[in-house]
Image 1 (cartoon, protein in one colour):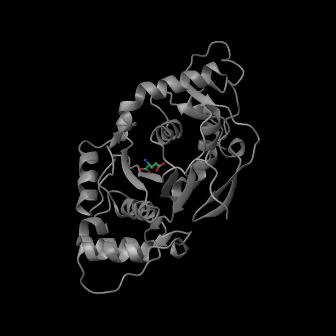
Image 2 (spheres, protein in one colour):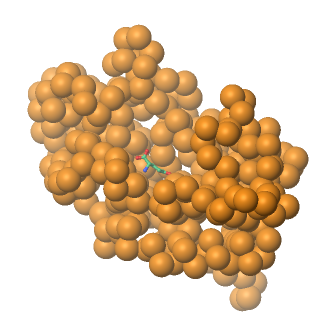
Length: 296
Ligand code: GLU
């Protein structure tokens, strides 16, 4: 290896985020994602920040964001930078949507949910202008038949074709709220997130989000999707589950279980939360993380 030429930039510092929606208490599945993203950031000498995705008031539970943050702090998971509330970014989201509509990458759609075909793939009814008698409701981003290929640090190589998954998809909803697919890209870029670490339930969104990155001319982050935690019957853990380990177990034990869900086996026995973290810092390795759902 020769010396680094003077003009080459050092690699951008690693930054990831944990981005819960404030729809209830922090449940075990979210703890696993928080722990996995935090350990990944630590192992990369990077930064881990919390972002509250409060862009859907009808689904928001009052006090949930505060309670989630307190639960995280109780586990020793503190945001290493200001906590961003997505609702504060509304003006920027609106401005980006206007930019996409002006650039003809997105368009007003007058269709109602009832008019969607059962395939769930938007047929493009309003793509070349609102049909007569329709008024604008949602805004959709245009898709094309392109194959999006990406490498995921845990899930390997994936290919997605958003035009076959959903067709042109919503970036502002009919009720005027900003859609997740737009807000998440806008804010991950603004926060200089270099790798998105989150649950595998969002793996299928990567193709659509890549189209938003391209439309906005933003560079793509890296991806790492952690295994989903499911119950005995294979269902994703629900936020209202009273048997949730976060509520039921002492913190060190809940952290042990989270580490096990991530394929790591801390030694048995009563250890403190600090000792459990120390073990995790020393033993964290990507190869241990399972791809598929893990049952608890
Ligand atoms: N807010 C989403 C959730 O709670 C996570 C979004 C993301 O990490 O991209 O499931």
